[in-house]
Image (tube, rainbow, N blue to C red; front, side, top):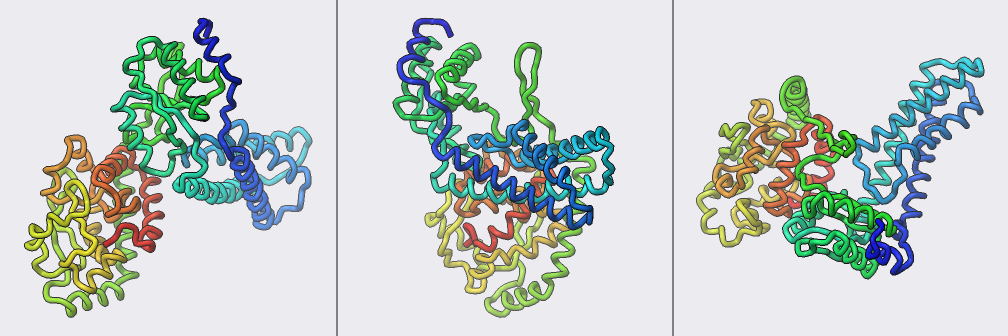
Length: 468
């Protein structure tokens, strides 16, 4: 930056550091947690292996481990690191620390069993990862309550700003609090846009800037980014991509420039077979374990109100194939015939009908809906291969009329008993958010994603989030 205008921008006020309020204590908490995890993992490994206490090893291993954390940028308290990247970094740190120990053992003619190093690697990785999950939960809770956010200026045109602000409200990975917006649409001179952005950031006492890449051309983006960094602000470049998991993205050089590689997520082949085998094993096991509860609920439904035990409803499955979804009946027998008279009472937007005090729900029905026990028969659907344990919410044929064209891609996978929608508020989630979550799942599906959703399902059910 050499123009007079840029120099004036940088000299107008003292350079601002890019550390947000509370960054130091957040970093200290993470460091403290890592040392707790390291100590616990090493103590457990010492007990498991029965190896003699080696002061040299107990000093060198955690020191090298910790040094790798800095090298892998695992202490940048501003960035919300993707869980997969964080776990990968922890594992790499443990393996590299063990490798350093191995080399030092050779140099100094020390003898150590490979089994000991393997156990130390596994247990330190496990314990540090568990502690990091606790710290992640603490930070996530603070962000949801509006604390620990970074005051930021958003540079984007109106459409991009609306889209980004909506997406920032989904999930727990948002660490920004947008305090000012700069619309670059009518500002043709990059230096003028830089001046406007720096002035807005300083005036709002922001810590940095979020620049939506699609709102400016490449030359302007370069000017803005370099100018803001020189002025002491952090810069986040928001991509125009949507429904792509961050852990699939990897920056790499392309000639003299920069490219982002997106890892594919195949849905067929061994992954599909593994998912099906997992579905069958879990569904069959759970059905056997809950069979007494199943029988009791069936009796309660049958003898407390007129009608069949099961409610069978046609839903849309994979590739648009219809199937009969099973649930314990929770409403009066003619519930669907009464729906038209209740449409004006719909408390949800879009194609979903939800009503907190639906008069069609029976007394026992209210209980099993609140506890999600009405969905137990869907395990039979899983065994029939109509559904999966995890997937998009099984849609009604009538709902599809309100779908945007891109939402039809959710039919590429089987619907699930639980999914991102179910663990993200269910009835409290808007139709737009529900659609976005379904698409995110479809485009980023993996066995790890399924396991994560299943792990979140039980707490969500126990809290009865959005269930009525």
